[in-house]
Image 1 (tube, rainbow, N blue to C red):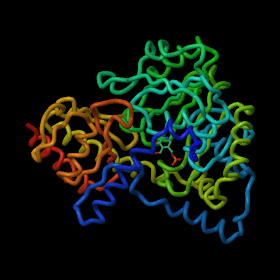
Image 2: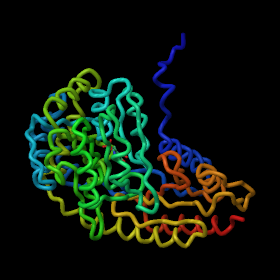
Image 3: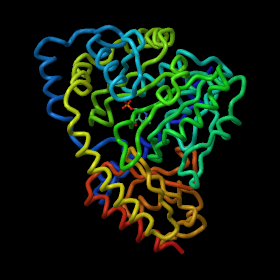
Length: 400
Ligand SMILES: Cc1ncc(COP(=O)(O)O)c(C=O)c1O
């Protein structure tokens, strides 16, 4: 008998956290490291949100709260869905958890039985397949290509659906590619789902507000209201409001599902942090004025990174619609040898050689289910980005 659970054999630790840790170790050892691995904005949480949290502490709002959120936050979430997404939800159809990550995890725990399939477009956020495996389900990945700018097609979705499909997991704008589905592109997918009434939709709208240029964010239940009663719309405050450490995520969907999610949460973590919930009320109800300047900075950085990476030999970097990631292809670098003599046979060896030889930390594509690529998070200063991209260009020029 082994001491550790057999379930753990099926999952791997988060590779993004592994890269961040390795970069931090090298930095601590005195190396000049530029880390482009972390998935969080470099901005500070806005002052009005911090003030709301401090006021909550001073008012003694430091006790247990209802398991899946205070009424004031559920109300603010309903108002947000009505305002931003044309979605009508009541507070009983809303759940709040410790980050979007916990909400997604609880939703899988609450619904998956052995053999249940979850369709996950690749490249995907690293945690999706492992969450599904932990909950006893089977991830079914559908690979998007560089040619479709990392978006899957209706035909691909149709082909992946089986009688065992329970969820279609959708994420736009995407981590790791930044790809955002237009209304028409999403409508093509929801049309497929209309033909398969046993399939539910879990949509991870975490990067909703990080949408650039002409791209307009939309979400499945908004594009196809007939899906409203079989959609779980997940969102959170981490990315848009620079609140990654506060740990508040939320979702809305049919009450029977919300109750099941609450049951899972009631026997694990109970309520998310009370003070963070009050901060989230202010994030959603307060001024949204800082979103535009933050996005202007992200667009500037995206444009800088896309232009510079496309100047690197062997690299092709499409321009994404949102989030703060790019996902360049390095197909043109595979099979070559680095200046220090390393054979670049996979995107993992590319990322390792890049880190060891230039001090630039990126996450290799295999971690996200589509190779050969790497992910750059451009949520860091323009100066650091310029220097990092220059080092990537020099590294690629040195490949023979
Ligand atoms: C696509 C996606 N979904 C969900 C999350 C989790 O966000 P949270 O900080 O709210 O748990 C992340 C965080 O990196 C993400 O990239």
